Length: 364
Image (cartoon, rainbow, N blue to C red):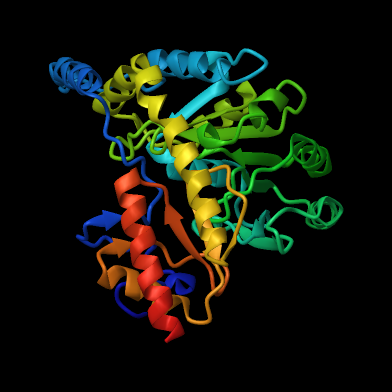
């Protein structure tokens, strides 16, 4: 046996992670570029200080107050109220997803999604020893609803992962397609990953509206994006209480620290202020999409805080050219495409100037 005795299917695999480089303009990991406002920071600091006086004790493992606060927030984004017993949370939506795969996947079961999509999904399946099945999206990154339904019926997945808006394309799913796949999945769990849900365009509904209709539907969210709390690591979901109860079986003891719970609760008290920049970021996104198209590029319609654009014969050269000019974006998605997170107006101007220079250099 080779040391260390790593599982054979993990040998040679590089760990997931976007480049972390110290450059003036960082537009590669879909963060909110605006930090929390000062009064929110002060409230978080006070809440954490209070929590620190109890750190000799384990936190509330049911994070009751946080679940109630999250349910209140989600109820405001849904046509139906969400109850606290329908809410679960963990250390980022990554842990939420892994817990779902640990609870409902496993040997002899499969998880299914449609590429291009979030590159961590197959890793969750792998870590939970779950077979990974992947269908394909259309050229405009939408789903062929009939083909998607047939794939689900053919494989009977235990878990279907449907990001909406999708990462890295920004594409949102129509609710009727979500409903159709929930019905096709039978007793399989259908997870609509709404990590970027707050950035969706007006008139695009949340899958939260469908929860009363489908007992196998899970809607996941995060505080990392619109809430500008990427460093806090708090993800959560809404689902039938039976699904939340099932996740308890696989969660680690006291998995949400007292500090995390205090931070998230304080942030939720300031939700309107934290989300105040969402409209600005939507407008900047739409302006960026229009500008990229005016440069002759193809851009996917986006309901997220990023834009996928292309296509380039050598996208690596374009990515490197931008980096050489102090602008970091993401080399991800199908061949020839690049993704830019939406930053401040100054950051987006720097990106545009750098891209114009790089494209001129490439054309010379």
